[in-house]
Image (tube, rainbow, N blue to C red):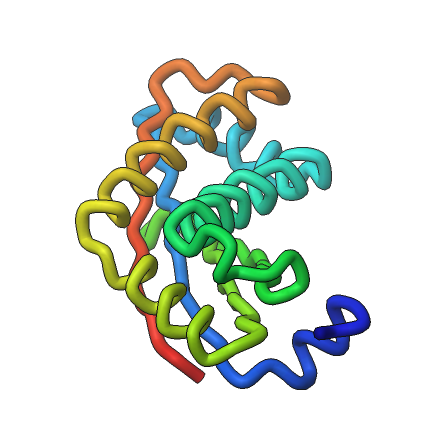
Length: 154
């Protein structure tokens, strides 16, 4: 159906965009500075992207079964970060789901629109974020919260 990722991205009939915020907090500013430095680690970011895309892609493929062709779905994630003493420290992930058919797009929309699944995702990613950060820095006392802040069809 599609030659490669770029072909799917450039020619897909349906795209879903989701914005995910990961907020990190610690009562000790110096410890938080160490944690924040670890969020810039390339390995951490790579595995975090994999955890996010894997969660959503697995659920779409599980629900869709054979109706989701191997080359009929791809997820791409951009990651940005922001830290300020007053505003806190947050990672922002912009997820783009490229859907090879309208049917896959409808299914993806239903998956991203599932409030129960969104809560399950947040709980999963909170733990996964702390686990991945823990490979680079001591995360004792770090609080992590995850929220899907926006979902839209583009």
